[in-house]
Length: 314
Ligand code: AKB
Image 1 (cartoon, rainbow, N blue to C red):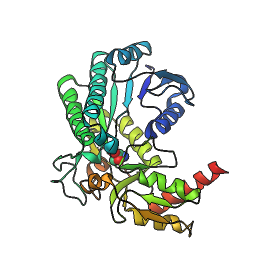
Image 2: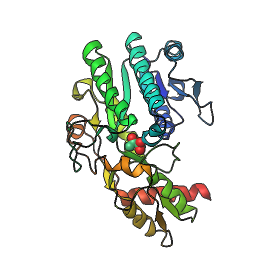
Image 3: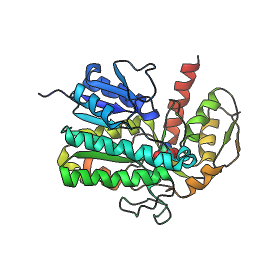
Image 4: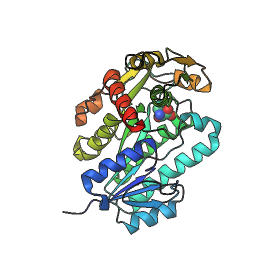
């Protein structure tokens, strides 16, 4: 059987750090090549320090390790991207196109490209946003994801490159966020709660957004990548649904464990971004094609995150 050699780009990010560990468990540490623009911190196993906007550096790694699969997780996110719009477009698009083209050139078997609910905007229904709702992104991050989805489909149709993609909702876990996302409040709030500190939320109390627990997001990614090729019918990106909540609901869920937890609201520019995004997602296509089914809701996620953060603190 041919050896699997997996390249992870963005291994220090919120998703990348967890995915690296999970893929190491499945395929063995010797078969996972973790990379990031931030030099090695505590990644166990093989690590290469690269800037994925440098196509030549990327190609060197793909050749050096005879890479068979790439998970391209690096990107500048929605909120940070609005502070540096042109740079965000350049960085996000450069990386994505380098990844697709190096993968094509070196006949990489499979590529994972993360998209986002940020691809949707004004003309998509807010409730149960359908798989094929129009894409009218309002952030540069969303624009780069929508363009990336179309490039993914182009590389599949034109070159047969097996690119697979998910439109992630906000990913929530106990792991810290590296910053720059509009959904980051849902991670920071738990960290404040276990430190017994009040939290000031940058979104309004009733801002409902689609979210997913980290374990479900990682499982979805691996299940999509392991699904038989003929089951993958959507070559732009799959809607991925799980739960939806607003800041006041997550505060109430935390208060069931920490009755004294308090939250204030100081909405900033991120409010405007969030108001263009779906409230909930129709992921029927992912369920039908490769059997997607989330396991967690707000209550179960809250219990798990608070328990884990508490344990880490003590
Ligand atoms: C962000 O908030 O920018 C990301 C996303 C929803 O893609 N978490």
